Figure 1 (cartoon, one colour):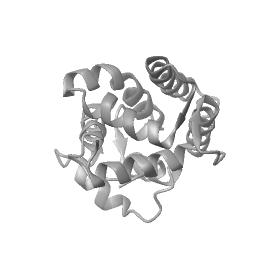
Figure 2 (tube, rainbow, N blue to C red):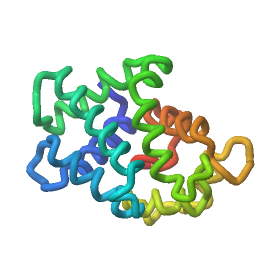
Figure 3 (tube, rainbow, N blue to C red):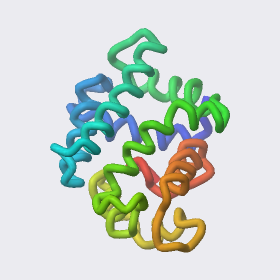
Figure 4 (tube, helix red, strand yellow):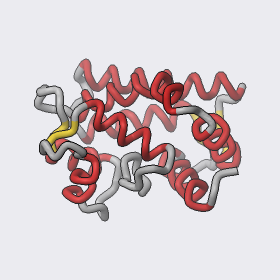
Length: 175
């Protein structure tokens, strides 16, 4: 079972994903989430936006296939997050999640320079509803080399560290 902080994070993430508030997360919730994000980032009709949506939904479909359910309750979500995510090693997580993170980084990179700038990252925090977070502070936490940009690797590492509880920056709508 996850510790108190991890459980609270999983519960908050579940609540953010349960778009219609029916107490379960299903593919329609995931579709709404991805559509909302790409729209907020102005990428709803772009190839990058489609790639992100496809990667995200493929990840969701893999989760539901693994558990044999199309709809996941909060309790199942917490248990699955603990068993399926936290039990993964770094290399296995990278293998499974990297396509989604790379697609997300591409959507965030609105100017196409291969990096995520602070203004692009700020749009991400707004898109996921993290208005109370200080975007500059969060960005500086993630910009390990101090370049003023996040490379795909820096962003992917930050997401991985966040998922494994080594990073508290609110990267997925929960700090």
